[in-house]
Amino acid sequence: MDYSTPETAGFGTIILLSVLSLIATLAVILRFWARRIQKIGFELNDYLIVLGLVFSIADFSVTSFGIVFFRSAMSESQADNPETILKAKTMDLKLIFICPLIWVISVSFTRASIISLYIRIFRTRKFLIACYVILAINAFFFIGTVLADCLICRPITFRWSYGTGGICGDQQSLDYFIGVFNLLMDITVVVMPMPVLWGLQMAVGKKAVLSVMFGMGIGICVVTFCRIYITTTINGSNREAVYFKIGLLANLEALFGVINACLPTMRPVFNKLRSASIWSGKSTTMFGSIPIAMRISQMWTLSRRGSSANGSSPTDLRDLANDNEYERLNSPQWMAGGVTGRNQDSLGEAKKTAMAIHVLEDVDVERANIQD
Image 1 (cartoon, rainbow, N blue to C red):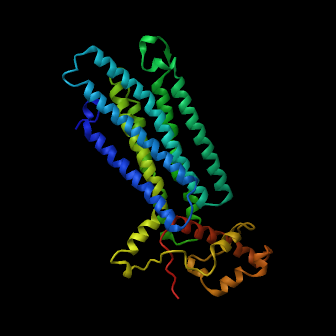
Image 2 (image 1 turned 60 degrees about the vertical axis):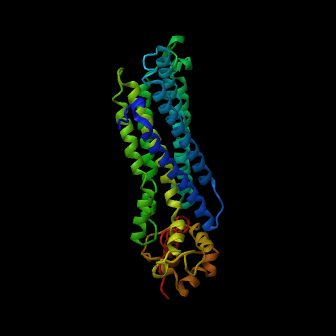
Image 3 (image 1 turned 90 degrees about the vertical axis):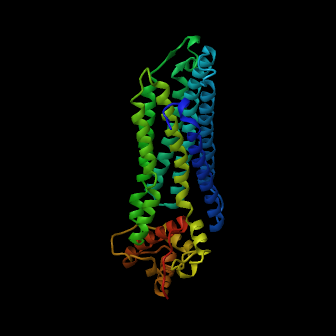
């Protein structure tokens, strides 16, 4: 099957994108099911990913329409009809204009959803500032891309109707810039939680699991890089074929983005399904809330006080499961905020461990197997 042009792509392309659309939709459904399992309300990051899904499916729908339209217009019975060919070429130019607008809406909402999830999970001040900065850049990227795509030709109808008269800027350079900037944004979103993850007070294995979970977006970066490379191959004779390839990769990027954004939230669903299987009795994983003596709310209260200091720290959540630790961290000196001297080192430990518990609770990674 030749996927290089809309005339030859056929329904295999539509089937591929349909399957990915169904997977993306299922991922969002599982995300909301996970929220119900965790008994937490739907949040901004959940609503944003729904918008990302809607526009990614819209992008796929427009692409599918273009394929069907071209195959119909370029059929043997119509191939020699100048009027039909003109309509087909005009439709192609309209799709080249419309699809990038739908794409940028989709990826912008999806990226905002991921960053909003970061804000919920990672509560350090510097990281929160970085997240809000990236959110602002993402918003400017969205606005700038829409404006540039709409204003590069004057009048706008000159994008698809050369007979009206007008002028256009360098479309290829604009697409290249948008692709590179989008790639840098994707890489930033993938990399930014890693230093925080590896600074948390949890087992190395859990850090690795979380790193893989949050690092799945690197696959999207590969798709984006391929799209940028293809953009550099545009010339006067292959413009329509190359833009069709770019459109397909943009569809893949948008759909994979939705799936990737939902992966960190779906662990409760997998745990529930596994606990209901015939092997659940043999599993050593503990489900539900983290079984430690200190309540999450108390740990979070501690994590917001004071500043961390250097010193040795326990390396596993089970170190907080004993009564002495619970009593010490709930003493009047701690709860009143009067931490001085020897307690100062322990404050840094509490903050790191509180953050680790918060991350584990939100993402619902494998629970600590605490022995009595």
